[in-house]
Amino acid sequence: MELKGQVVMVTGGARGIGRAIADKFAEKGADLVIADVSLQSAEEAARELSQKGARAKAVNLDVSKAPEVTGVFDQVMKEFGRIDVLVNNAGITRDGLLLRMKEEDWDLVLSINLKGVFLCSKEAVKMMVKQRYGRIINIASVVAFMGNPGQANYSASKAGIIGLTKTTAREYANRGITVNAVAPGFISTAMTDALSENIKQEMLKSIPIGKFGSVADVANAVTFFAEPGNGYITGQVIHVNGGMYM
Ligand code: NAP
Image (cartoon, rainbow, N blue to C red; front, side, top):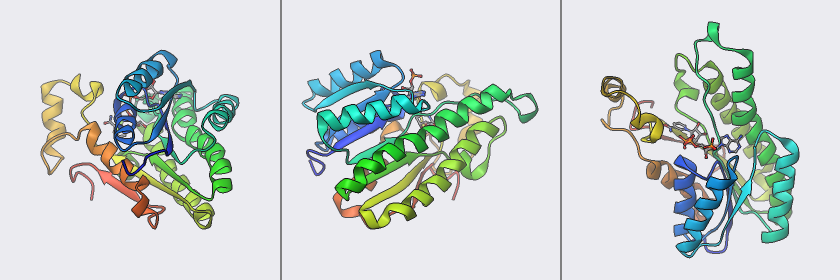
């Protein structure tokens, strides 16, 4: 229970990796704000966390909409009085080869995956500077480092997150705020489960550990950055990819 009483907001926390991150923080005693574009699934997640004894609140948030972001952080401030950890996890894909990629798919991915991190971090930093304490953890991807055919928009957004992480880390290090990133590789989720056996076998060949990662593998790396003993680590990236990128 080393994070007892800490207030943690997870964007896109209703399902997938975000949900596993929320579960892990709850296990460590934290209070959770599940911020998701789907209020119904956020409420379901918050209800399940509450049943396990955690304090959890669901909020409706599209991270790419500045007024919504401001409103949600105001609401959290009123109800919880602080925010100790922000996990910028919300992200989408709209894949296609560069020549066929529509401008609206480029704009949508960049606005949710990258601008969303900027907007939420800005609001969190306002509160964290006053507290002189905070942890921001951004979910990037292995494709930020390797590229991936069909993911020009997504890989650019995730590479942007790495630059944003390092700059924010430098700007607020002397205010007690650390900013780090976790870069997952192929993680078993509904998305990867749906792939054909052939494609899965091809993907597995590129992973030295020989299996997909789990959502818990990502969640463990995220909570590492929030643990009280790890406050001297900032501007860093933990790769959770089974060795596919070193
Ligand atoms: P997921 O299962 O699709 O979950 C994403 C969550 O974010 C969903 O609850 C989704 O809500 C929510 N969301 C989508 N757009 C949002 C917005 N504008 N504002 C707030 N919430 C929004 O995805 P995941 O696989 O768990 O991925 C989580 C993060 O890890 C993403 O940043 C992704 O890029 C990154 N990642 C994933 C993998 C992987 O293998 N899965 C690998 C590397 C990196 P709805 O369900 O209502 O859309």
